[in-house]
Length: 470
Figure (cartoon, rainbow, N blue to C red):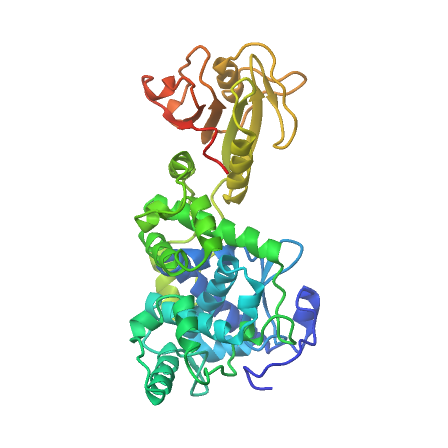
């Protein structure tokens, strides 16, 4: 069956063993396809797409199988993502074509997260609109003039061809049309203009996602998994941008501009992640939780990731460009970052702050969080558990615990190397000078004492209003 023809999947796409057994490609083809895939992911991680790099880092299983015609990212109900790719398809495309397809598939999952309306996604014209914008962005970010081709035929929807058909259709109707840049500005701009055509050119293309919800070609996309993975990918790309990674900042700014104004759900998500600073401005209709955005910035600086590539970057890129097997092993940060969150049980900290912080920390890759409740003594606890204050408040008790001098009742001393200590408190207790004050971050409740801001040496400190979270 030629690539691109819609078909019913004859193998359960979440059954990895069945996928590998189904009509396997020749060993040399499988090896070459994997080499191309790894070389493409290497380039994403270096310069071309922080979002795609983070997404595929979350695809712990990446399988070459002829059970799919092209490539696809699946989000299953167990919370995992799976990358499937057809080895013959990848080898036929070559490295540049593989990069285009992988970028395209990553962008699909992110946009599915940002546009969660099932009725909109079920509309074939809207699905065509997303193909147009995704391929337009892919051409720009990857520096391509044309779509990749297979056997002399372009792979996917060419946004310029669709725009030319749109111009001809509206000219025949004697209607004014918009130029190409206005046409491809957002998914909604393409969708709106395609809706003015007498017969929008919904084609038969290779992208698995054009088959629509509920039909034979639809791929598994569990909404909860898409939401969890999508939010985590965007947050980690945002943290990379805050650490000064210019390609990540440029990519996120473009994605913000294309989604912020068109989707209330996207605006809410971007606001929760604190992405307005990357964009350069803030949605005027949304309250700014400045302390949240400040905290994301501070955590980005304290929890800087280690080197994710374990080979010399220039040598690895050169080998990939020459068609040689790159000496690479993609992995996460060198060591898991340790974050201690100390919650003052007498400090009137709103539960919503704790809930938001729990969600934020859970989305940051490579971070292990230790939660402590404290008043005069320190006790570990889990978010969601009921904590009750006792007598007095002692910041020194937290410092002694974190620095390994004391242990909780019936516990053992804390021996991990800490990267950041976040204290949620009203600030009213004897002041302290931790051994590493540059690692301490203080959130002070409304009306509290923000002494850490004036301490010598100063520590990161911000007030939290009890009315700021909704």
